[in-house]
Image 1 (cartoon, protein in one colour):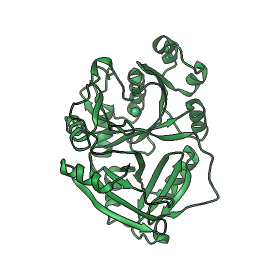
Image 2 (spheres, protein in one colour; image 1 turned 180 degrees about the vertical axis):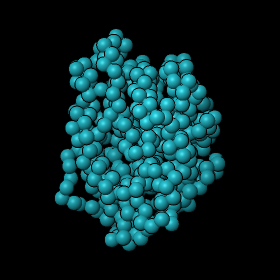
Image 3 (cartoon, rainbow, N blue to C red; image 1 turned 90 degrees about the vertical axis):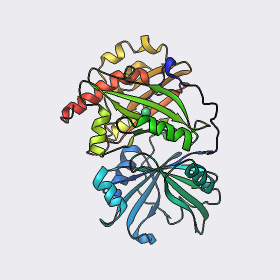
Image 4 (cartoon, protein in one colour; image 1 turned 60 degrees about the vertical axis):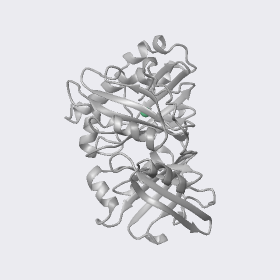
Length: 378
Ligand code: FE2
């Protein structure tokens, strides 16, 4: 849902340097009200498999965490076991949401030192943890809202997930749906805060601003937002940042901020190699997606040119297509996956395009606004 416009592509800052080498996303951790049931939902609906577990049975007293895996994608679902801890407070305030965007690094101490030296607020001092499978080093810093980045160094570890977790091998392991890895994670921040976080990712994390677009690019009659896409040096980690913009009615970003009660992760975009198959599977398993009007498809090929896929299944499933200078992409957005209109997922298949689907913004926003109106928040 974030994309390019030729005029808005920023130059790479001359001082961009990779003092924070990242191998990719290590995992995404959600704080949820009922991790046992959430795990079942992600397994059944999204095709994740059980990987590891931590909780009272493994010596952890204040929480239960279920680790799910699908290809290179790892989700951790954590719930508090008493009301007097940060997890419980997080859920009371934000509802179910993303707490941790964990990044896979070769040196978690250096990652902490380099980012804190540049102004990051520490969340977790570097700590070494061990079990019979080896040792890991973890550290962490605060980002927008109550969200954090953890740096995970696992080169000396070959256990199922992290020390403290036990392998979790239930009989029930649904087949996967072809979800591969995290393509990008989008944060919503408050009014006038986007550039603060753009500066943070540039100066503290060594990222660069790939693309920008403002409310002239992305507005419908009602709702508007501004967005900038931040990418790390090797391009494996991309964090678009959204801020609301003034429109005739309430921006969808503002609706998120009201219900999440502040900044947080808006969506996690997950890559697939076959979006038609993946979305067919997901819909058959009950995942709900935003739908665009049929008229979107009447002029689609005029807008994006020749594509490999047949138009009919794209239209039946509601998959969107956009093209940039390097190729095209196919994408679709789920409805929010909890009762507050906050976190959702994007499923994306890239065929050369490195952008984020700007051409679909208008159609999408109109779809989001139809849902927003149904909730009485427009
Ligand atoms: Fe996106």
